[in-house]
Image 1 (tube, rainbow, N blue to C red):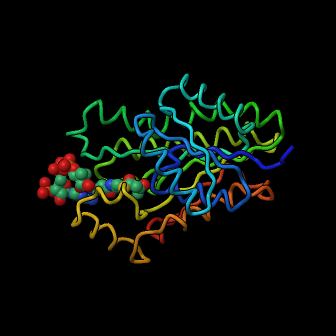
Image 2: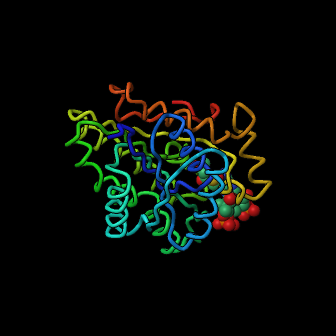
Length: 248
Ligand code: CAA
């Protein structure tokens, strides 16, 4: 039997997710990218594109806000590929608005997709990891979960919550060689930051000491550091990858 470990990346077909899937494949993992089911056609096209570029990546649809749907997805991944040993919780959305205009729908969508999702997925792979004595979990948070961001009360709350989740679960996994860490990217060139109005983006870039946004590869490097088999004593950490925009 192959000893290749299975890595699941939620939001795997997205801006940072795609690069993470490739980097984890380069690390020797069998990667499965989770996608949002209404995007099935796009996900299949994405998979074909990856294959053409030399990356054989599995895809698995499930709405990460739905606990039972996630359970079904994990069952089918385990049947097809084997148990999940590496999990990257990367699914995330924005619904930016100042608090006075932020509707309950905007609040709930972001909390459900960016924070509750981590519980929904992690809970359903964690026990297996502890039983097998190996696990690497990485939660993709954000600089805006560390410092807060004007217009992002929902997103900042969810991303700060993710690191709280990391710190708690890290303690629960520690004796079983299951590490749990957070990576907090700053502003990265993806479809998500492309939604920001140009003049707002220009003023944000002025606040980044490196004077530019990150490339997804620069985030992936921190993630594969966390998922390395040999990286077995670092847990509960929050790695900032933000070009010096927030240092503490
Ligand atoms: N500090 C103080 N005032 C600010 C401000 C800031 N940082 N940013 C905007 N304002 C002001 C504007 O100048 C404007 O002032 P006037 O009303 O006097 O003209 C006012 O706030 C805008 O207020 P509104 O209530 O009209 O704004 P809105 O509810 O439509 O929301 C916004 C505006 C969508 C939040 C817009 O400011 C914005 O896009 N901000 C950027 C948010 C951001 O950084 N998002 C990151 C997305 S990428 C991501 O999230 C990935 C990651 O992890 C980093």
